[in-house]
Length: 281
Image (cartoon, rainbow, N blue to C red; front, top):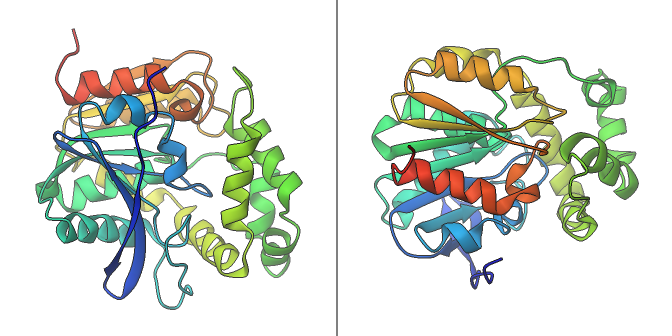
């Protein structure tokens, strides 16, 4: 295991909104977009490998981590809004074009960015990405119910349920659950402002139907990377995504759940590096 690079977080104001991000490593720029209910911290396991080859730009998207959590009336909390924020960040730090890698919700943001702003995206990596409508389990449907949904999500979703979600839905159990990192995600989530933002994201991104037409517009060379034991988005969705993306290929991480970047960081980083540096055989 490589030693972890020094990660210094900076704040930048984008359209009046404070966004926190890390800027680590040297080389071609690589923007890393995190998934739902997490933050830049989900990329920490892979950064020791990626930062050796790339300048890694790792934001906390608005509403998550250390970034500002504006009210849903002030910020749209949609895939398109997150993509716009990522583009604004690149502009603010004078990065006109970059590789983009997104995980889960962040993958759907990366897809939107590649389809709508192809001039800023070089190569694309989509890790266990929210891409097509899927069967939402009961625990996922409850927060979306009228009237009782917000109460379930904002008042009952405590630390134990948060741990249960990561243990039974996100991670595969190989090699195990990193409770310290999960608890750090919960500590970022537990404030009223964070829960309001996260609930708005859930409402505004759960419908994936509008993302489908964008898939065929992506022209970037794309790596689709998936855990073979993903309990949230089955591997069949990855195969469909590769069929429908114009320039894509699939790599599967064995014995991994929904977050191979956390469960198998070295293998994940190796696959990403191979793709971005055009090293695949």
